[in-house]
Image (cartoon, rainbow, N blue to C red; front, side, top):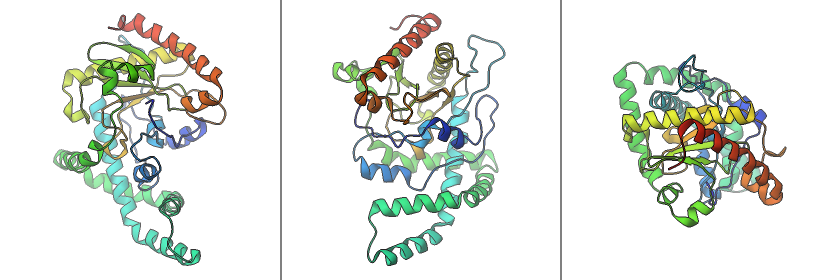
Amino acid sequence: MATVREARTTTSTQRRNLSSTTRGATGTATVTGSGPRGEERLDRFHEGGQVSTEHDLRLRTGAVAGAGPTRTAVPDLMADWRSATLEATAHELAQQELMPELHQVLQSAARSNGGMLSPEDQASIADTFFEQNDKRVRTLARTHLGDLSKTPKHIDNTLSRVVVERRPRIQKKRDPFTPIAMNDPAARAKERVLWENPRVMVLVDLFAPCPKALVVPKKQMMFPVEADAATLTELARVAAHVSDALSDVTGAQPSGIWINPPQHLMVRQLHVHVLPQVKDYVDTGEPLLHAAANDPSVMKKADALFAKVSAALAKSLGPSS
C-alpha cells in the first residue's frame, strides 16, 4: 500500500504469460512460481518496505457463477490458499534439487569476474538460471506436489510446517493495513478506501500497474487458518462483489481472486487480491503511484474509475460504515 513499496511489476502481457493455469471455483491448479529467493532479493533492495511481486499480479481467474447474488463465483479462499501453498512448497523443493548446479554456475561466474559477486549479481544469475531451467523445475515440482498431496494427512502436515516455518519471517514485515483499519488519519490520507464495514475494507492497490483492489479484514491475522469461517466467507463474498464492480466499470471478465501463500507474502496482514485482466494505467507498466508521480493526470483518471467502482459497491453491498 502507500508506503515505500517499490514494485518489480509485470505488464499485461507478462501477466498472461505468468498465468499458466486458472484457479477458481473449478479448483483447477498447476505448479507455478517465480525466480529463486525472490522475496529475499527484493528485501535487500527495499529493506523495511513493501513490494509488489509477480505473485501479486499472477492472474487467477474465477469461474462465473450460474446464479446467486454475484456474477463472479464466490471463491473458496481456504481451499485455494491450501492449493497455492502446496504448489509453492513443491516449487521450492524442485528448485532446491537444482541448487548444486546453480552453485557451479555462480562459482564459474565469480571466476570469470575475478572475485566475489555482489548479492544483486548472484540473484540475477540465479533468476536467469531458473528461467532457463523452468521446464525441469516444473517437472520436478509436479512430482513433489504428488508426494505432498498423497493423503489429507500429508497435506495438513505440509501446511502446518509451512505456516510455522514462515511465521517468524512474516512477523518482521510491515503491516500497512492495521493503521487504516484503526482510522489513523495519516494512513488514510495516503489510501483510496473504496468500501468498508466494521470488519472488512476494500482498498485500491496503488502499487499495481493496472486497476486492482485488495480486500482486507480489519482484525489482525496473518494466514487464512487464523480466520474463522464467518470472516473467510465475508472476505470471499466482498471480493466477488468487488470483481463484479470492476467488471461493470471496465468491461472486464470476472477477476482473479486469491490469497498469496506464505512463501510469497510481503506484508504481515492477511489480504485478498482482486485482479481483473485489464489494460495497464500507462504503457510502461509502472505502478499507479509511480506513474501518477510522473503524470498527475494518471491518478485523476484512476480516481474517476475507482469512484465508479466505489459507487457500484455501495449499490450492491450498502453504504460504507
